[in-house]
Image (tube, rainbow over all chains, first blue to last red; front, top):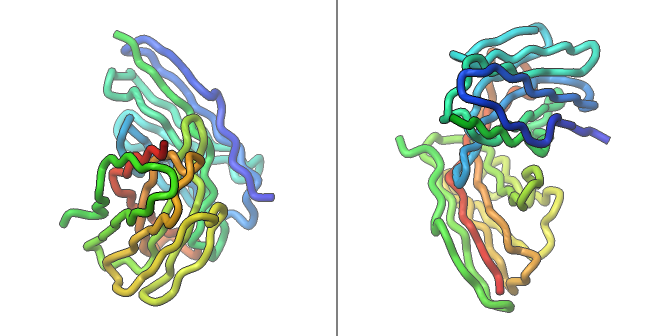
Length: 112
Length: 118
């Protein structure tokens, strides 16, 4: 069964600190992996999209990594800000499929 | 370019009532989706459409119906509302990222409709 598991489920950090969120998947054959940010009360917004051949992609203070061999991805947030408080969702797509598999998300709270 | 819009933003229904959640996209995307998101859970696919006139069931279709008469609109119908349908509903549309290979469909989400059934 195609699955996407995220850890931790929730995380609390102080403003200015760094953090790393994890995503493990069993989706096969792999096509691409996306990280979404979902603010409270809003729809998810794409942060990065990575294909099989990419192992790092950055979007400002967000850096995603992908290890297609171990089927793991991480999202690293540098110098966190209060506005980073949100749910971060890992989404993996199969080759040729337009229906992606969603993780449950990691809830991040950044305290001042 | 408004992207994906959903109405209403909030709604309270009584058990047994019916309603339609509206979804419109102005990006000329062929693919559209309806998801529900329960607290602490991931998004679950209710229905999807690959183009006007074509719809198919997702993971949790029971209690819902959809139609796709135009490329832009993809309404979701609840016929006999039940408390189990209390959730936040998201509509999304997508296009194929041609440069990223097969399966690279970039999804854009609407702001969601928060539905409570009591």
